[in-house]
Image 1 (tube, one colour):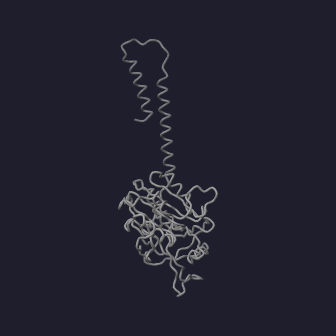
Image 2 (tube, helix red, strand yellow):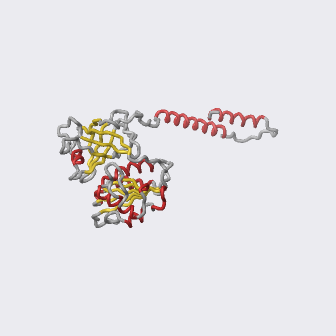
Image 3 (cartoon, helix red, strand yellow):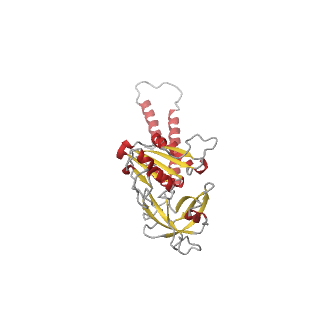
Length: 332
């Protein structure tokens, strides 16, 4: 029943009550109740019409549709144009590449891509034998982000590919192949996950954390130890601090630096036995715990033993000393 009809019904009921009352009517001032009810009905109806029209006039923005096929090719290199470069700090920048309209990378977690200079590049990046230099990188953009693929790349003096990419200008192209799955991560696969990263080795950790923490069903607790030379070298610090504030029961991050500034309050020095034992899940959790490691080769070797090319290699270093097993540790 509409508000207006309700107010008229109330008015009729009031009149009928007077008409069929056994007591004779007494002289008194007429009541304003019917008019109050009528006014309330009209006001309510007007509000309903306004809200109804407002909801139709300003619908929620629809999420852009993207193709269910990745813009990348896992079998072949595809050239993508550099859209823009965003400086990040003194030696790192975000490189945003343009994907075809209505497509996304659709990278599974956790995976990376490999890159090389295009065949027709003016100065192709080649090794001493004249073969293209190929390097792996992990994008930091969401896998379902339409139209863009973003890398956070630190320039190393000895890194031929990182220097090559840092010299690219918007409009230049880079050959990219992928995705290449590194670890088949599943939500709630482990009770606890420990992460140790150094420098630009943070990107696969960020990919996993972004994916897992925003999943409402996630119950896994993640702890990240992130090692850098100085506080200024810490990549994605604002993002990690925001994740810790938003998900305090399932995520914690510990920063350690080699060279501390006067106001630094965190750990100082390399990742050692004490830091691992204090913050990461213990080895006696067995298959309920996983430790991910990613960073410069020297750091990975000291923590978990060197990788054997693309293979994991034998577990060694600090993690083996502390009692972790091969099955509990994964080196990116």
